Amino acid sequence: QVQLVESGGGLVQPGGSLRVSCVASGFSFSRRAMSWYRQAPGKEREWVARVSSDGDSSNYTDSVKGRFTISRDNAKNTVYLQMNSLKREDTAVYYCNAGFLVGIYDWGKGTLVTISS
Image (cartoon, rainbow, N blue to C red; front, side, top):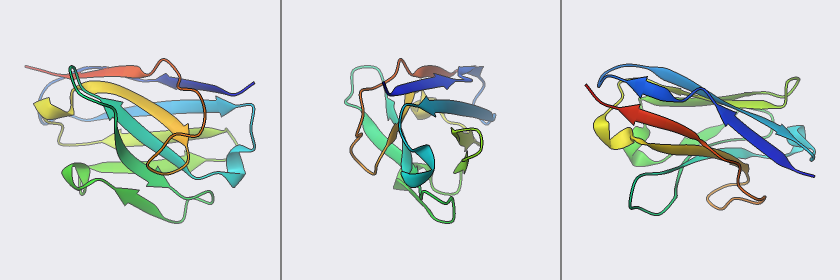
């Protein structure tokens, strides 16, 4: 049974930083590219970033390039998203999933990131 458990969200002031994490189980984590997605209030879920199975390459949506960094630890079945220079428009529930652009498995509960002063 695949499980995706996101954590690390919270309330951050504009310009601040936050790191969210996702622990995965139930599939061969080290053999899958992993992505982060987000869903802002009233909007559809969007893809944010992707990291290759070995962690050597990554891709980002234009709105977060230069501010967000995706990484992974295959020994811990964990994928991270380091978010810097946060903006109000980054407020969303953040999800991880295997794959690229489209999630492969059922979604976890996500972790809420709120950017507000």
